[in-house]
Image 1 (cartoon, one colour):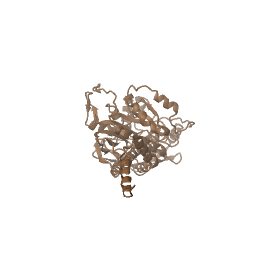
Image 2 (cartoon, one colour):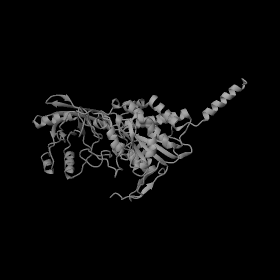
Image 3 (cartoon, helix red, strand yellow):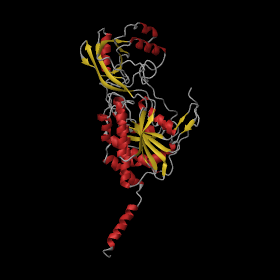
Image 4 (spheres, helix red, strand yellow):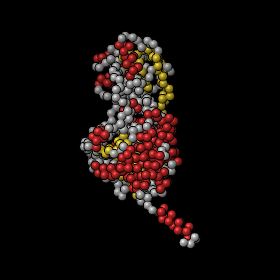
Length: 523
């Protein structure tokens, strides 16, 4: 061969090799490399929790967090990054300082947390404790004139049992098999509110009226679960309406660790007076009442008008930094976004459909952010029960969600849509060695995928190991970075990225289950 021809031949061979289409399996392998070997998910989680937590909807800290997330997505190369406004949400709230102490019969520091939207006290306040022992309207009469200047216990004693089973649990093969064999769900459950005293009924109305007439220093409860210093706490109730309403009258309300609550309860039962002191410094914020979701995109190519969405809720409660609920889900979705962008850069292959990440706010108050987004852009049922399709209703192929803690993905809730099972089973195949194998027709409730699934757009929540989500971290003072599991989060972010990519590259959109074009209007 002539020496002068050799460079040209090598160049031609190299160009031919480079021009070969990259197989789908190769793309998935590259996604796995960036997700499992070059992960940044824990760095992202640390920023969202240690630096930007807690992230109460309406709080200045959430505003800082949304600004950070938008900037991060821009830095990664995402386009059309925007803070999607929704509302009105009402006033926000942020805790600035809290302390609580017992002084008699002896001193000890109290483990307790103010309920969100509790107002500030007038400095450090001090008073005796009384247990409001009433179950009928007649019982309430004996407390008239006796509650002002007092700390009022409103729950009974809760007897504890020592833990003999592990607090952290993973789904067993038997449980996964049961899920896989489950029939289609019949209907979706509704989220409930356990916060006292919003359970309705004449007695509750009378009790609330008495408390707001007497104006005690604070009402104190203990959560229905939790021990060993773990406190589950959420939002306060108002005299009327919502505590988020501008000008709503709200009493200071505190949730105490069950051990300290029980101790005080027992002392009072023995006729031994208990004196407490407390100070709450809190600020109401967000004067215009409007809030924002975070939206960003990677534009598609030949099917760019169609969309694959993935997301999680970004807001949290106040007692900790909102790690497993839901900085974990947000960090994993942001990591999936990063993985997808790195895969595109490395391969030069762009998605056929537009990829859209969404970080929702207001989820803890009832999926408010995602519902507002769906109503504006996707679809909703009007007051007559007729489905009104929005701009993106027919464009969205799927929405994928993560909101069950730090646990790794074990499969997918199909929401009764058996038509997607074939595709999902194939997409899980590369991850079977990582424990993700199960498809169930079951639904799961209480997450933002319902804002899409409820109107007939394919919306899915991944099956996750619970770990200590329900027993220790969900809505508790222990929901901190330390309870995140790095390997689980790497796995979940990687599988999510793969599902988003696979959905984007299909020839057609994912099949949809039938939806009622008209349903019975709410009375």
